[in-house]
Image (cartoon, rainbow, N blue to C red):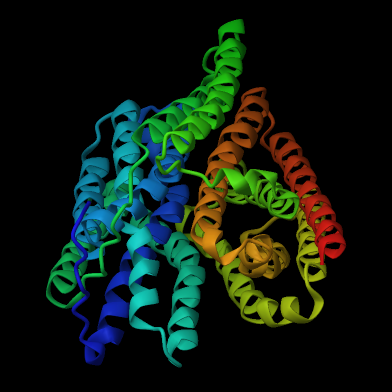
Length: 470
């Protein structure tokens, strides 16, 4: 049993603390997107295969997804400030390792470590905000937090394009990782001086075995999708995937045993029988399945299919991100009035944006700026869905299970992102290798539309179940 440590909070400096922890969240968000712009350059210099290209993105998300709940619990046990500092220092060091990598395999290993350290850092951000902003300033603080999250994508695309195109310090693509080092050091110094300690929670336990089994299951399930093309989709690929499904099923049984022995499993097993929550979780999975993979496919297609330079490719996404931010600002209010209908409408707008994008590419007039305008449609629909989605999914979860529900939602989000990168990326690269980048894009757009339509179907199903319950 750990001693309860009372928080020492200087509320006069809480806005500086907000700036510090949100800067860390911003750094994490930027890193999820900045790599996309640099991927073609990384692949060329390191002679990385398509599987390694996908793995650079996917393994970062898998590591984060499987360890983020553990990271939150470590903050409860050892103190939010201590784990935050450990996470930022680890993220900074692993970013340096990423930039120094000499092969695709080494970069994948570094990204695995980077995702794991992010899982220590990110959960402490919301824990700190909950402590410091329990009064009337709470809405303003969380609005700042939300805006920063939205702008991280734009900053990632733009900064990645600038660093790769202009190469201001002669480091090439490595600068997209090295840029984290000075910012990480500044965040660490600021947090060391002004960040308060949040009270430790007695009785909090880790579920190390659950995290290991979940990680192994996801690697066995997603890894073959990454390696399939390199291995020519030989039978062993499908056997390993089947093994991954078995391991994930064993994970649920393991969690039941952990709960039965008085431990704290990674997931709240009671939520698995909540029909409304689970349908919402499925909707979130299919929505995010078509999220990060969309940006990967579009970045590769623009640079390799349309020969758009990295800086222009990064700028193409700016109207999308701005439309996303605008839609996000208004979607929460509209969702309070109209419920999940707004999310379903957002899905429909995304699908319409994908259709217009396909028509534009088919017309052979797909310039960078025309793409930018078309992508804004997709971004607006995405903003309508993403901002209120977590609230809608968690709306029926009991307050006592709110933390567990939020953890399951965040884990599902990142697993879906990684799965989409692996699955849709595999389709794109396989068809592209046959000689047609345009056909590869059309196939990917069809999969994006199917995934988003499935998310809308689950949202509608969730809405009907909630109405019956209410």
